[in-house]
Image (cartoon, rainbow, N blue to C red; front, top):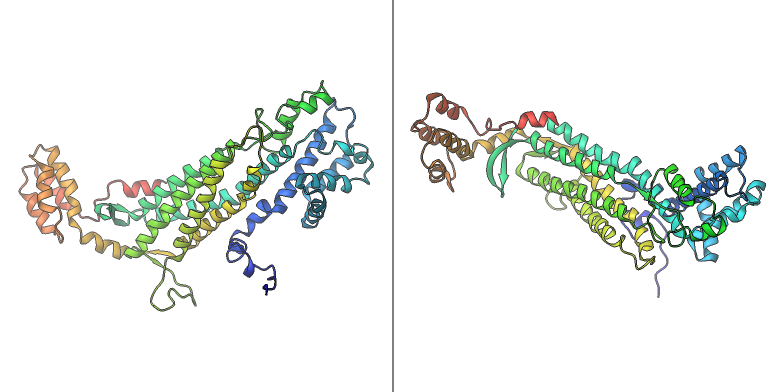
Length: 461
């Protein structure tokens, strides 16, 4: 016996983006839901009709009165869920999503005389992709500006705060997982800020392109109907006015190369943050960071003492999912058989899923950062256990003063030996044939003070 249909609730959603995590990614619904796509299509259709009315060569579409122009623009701006549901009802008959929008607009303005007399110029000479590619461009533009780039910069701001606050907090570095030349906690955070700034700039610089040039990209039907109109100029003006960059060379579809560039750029930002998630996870494990506890939270179902780094684990997992989708989009979308096939259409409907996992990863990371408290005492204790890291400056000074086999001497003294002490190193330094002030400078070093320009670099970011 079949199970009864479950109610449509976050609890019963197939995707965790619409279920467990819905509150964290809800802001993207307005942009990447089917409602968002339909609304963007309506805006493009109305913008095209208004552009035709402003083109003197299209005599059959006279200029609209101010009131009608405002009514058309209002229909685009105030388009709501009930309107989208009406479009979907028409689609049940047409079985074509873009044609349903054309019919909805014709019904919507059938009672407006100025529009009714030019009603067949709605969707004039357009293929569906003339509307779709511009709609997708508008969706990406608004989501990037209003949600995604601000969220990425919030992470950079939080990390910058950590970089400045802990600029001088010395920390043992670990190259290959082994004790290495000291750094500062602030400098490690500053490194990530610099990477994120480059990543955000790369995302921001991707030109969002669009076209409105007919069935195969050459204004074929346009030229037959109005040979005297400069259709390329009109198309370029429309695309530019709605906030996109005109692409004059396309087939039926805008080739999506800019989308591939954009998705790759977002994936690279995500990769930087996965790297950060893993490093912070490790620093928490070492005790360099503690996590602020919240009343009532449980870390383990059986071990009461645990405070797990779940935000960074959640972020890492979801950014991995995001990148799998973003990279598929980047690899698939620029490929289309001959002048058009439909494989891009269904894939593009998952832009919101890719950006949903991206935003979820960013939100989780931001939550984790807000819980962190550095433990300088723990870092200092670790440094004091690893005096062997001063082998590097000692052998470097020996090179300066021409002493024989400096690297080899320090390797014999320190390599693979635990518990190296200040006293052992100072005894070695005292025997070196170099100026007194040079030996004094080396003996003044400790693992905690051997940080080079790290603090300066951290404060400068």
